Image (tube, rainbow, N blue to C red; front, side, top):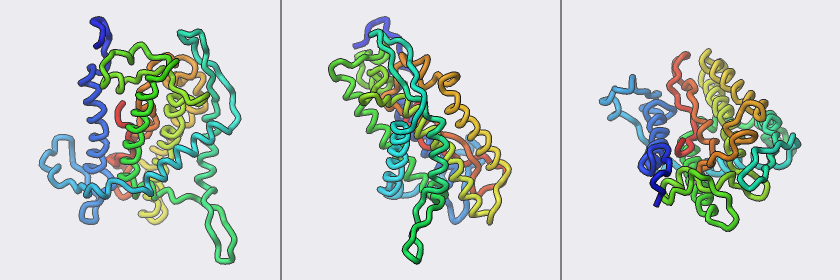
Length: 313
């Protein structure tokens, strides 16, 4: 058990359990109560948080529609693509803070280049066979992400829990440097907080990678997917709110990746690597939780929940 003076965070084991179970449930609720799910051919959104009677009209799909191998493949493909960019693209190598062992871990800061390469590939990397047997390169159909958001959400939750389980199990290996806040002795709490400090596969830092790459860049991609869907449905136009959401949140994503070594300590590249990482590692799920206008909704509505879910935090 935990020592008497152990400092519990997030409400301790019960709080951790509530977050791990509750936040994925909230993501699904937001999608069903105000999202892309169609109800009798029309978009549906409850009128307010206290409109309890309206909740009985929620159009919840059968469970077999919550998952698809195609969406899981797209999700894993995006994650793998970002891993390849992180491993292969050039970039400055920075040192983290000094650990208890006296070691300083190294981090490759090529996220800004990964940001631009990702959008170039999305815009020009889709191969298509022509009638004469040739190949043309064009834009990936981003509106597909909007149409299959439920399945992508499920894939992200499943992936996050799977990665969490792997990191928790691997933290019991020999030679692991453990986080002070992640060794309470309560398995549920330690799973939630994370036992190993800066979990790595060789030189590949899972915490910092998931903090910034697939999720932060993916956040901007999902926003563009909402814009692409609205562009289709409106016959070639976008609402002001859609343009503003993409512009301002896209600027935030770009700025975070451009200035990560100077002003983005959350991933621990320069300042915070001694913080215990969450066992589910992936801020990729946190950062892709953002509001974007409904592609089929009124011009200034912001009720569409466009977010992948990191299961908690």
